[in-house]
Image (cartoon, rainbow, N blue to C red; front, side, top):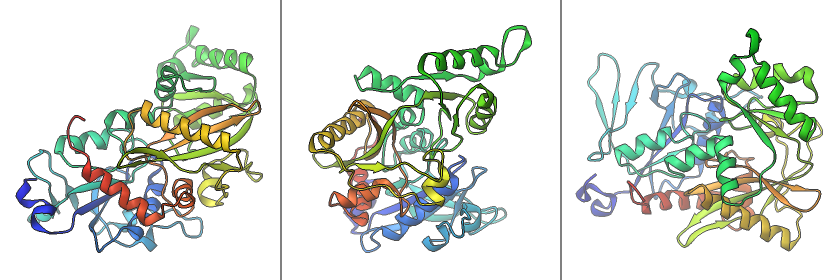
Length: 387
């Protein structure tokens, strides 16, 4: 986009493309998040273009209708339900010399939809939160909300996230990783024998139960708490429905604490932390507890001043360690001996009405609409390309 057609030069409002949905198992939660963002974004300040990505990867024009994007009667929404057409496609530019978005349908003349000044990608999981979309936007020279390619990829892959944190001196819990070829091969043709032994040896060192997780998924998708060897194969199969690479973590006994990080003009700051109390109706804080049964977190967390300060410092350190931008939700365990252990970060945490990230910032003095505005403004300030 040339300076002659920028919002500043023409006096027009910046145009924000809210991109949501996607090919991951978190498709529906992304739709819910998009509905909340569309409801909150200041239409007097920004023009908005909702773009949904279907579960098979088609980019579609969608209704700007937040009410249809909510979970209703335990039914999850989808882009397919919101798309203006069953076969129309939105095309983003592929060069940094234009930000013109085009809409095409079979047998029809392509239609120019105008320029996009910034993308707000509210996708969760692979093919959206993992650096793939961010790389495409970097190639096109379009600013976007949130982390860049490296931070997005690190934040999505729990193995390499933990490796980065360890290299920066951040405390992480015990874990082991099973790659696809380790599960597919074994001595004398016994599938997964070596991988199974690796996990059993890990359990022998750290004890049962274990948590078997997809290495690159979120929203507690595909996670199983395994109490003994009998449930291991089924847990691995469930995790591999979401990701062929899995991570196995030991149980950390303690309190679950979360903390938000937001990029301000003078750098990242941490919110007041929240606590996820024990979920009595669920074995752990799983997908249904988060999104269907609306398990409530405690904001702010009942911590001492010293504990609050320590977790805020660790959250900002995690943000910096992974080279994050825009926003992060950092998840911790406060162990029984009073130490914080970082579990993971989310570079695009949920923005649903019950999500912890906006709730933490609300308690910290930044309301939802201001939060959305700050994220868009941070993206508009940020230069494209290497930084």
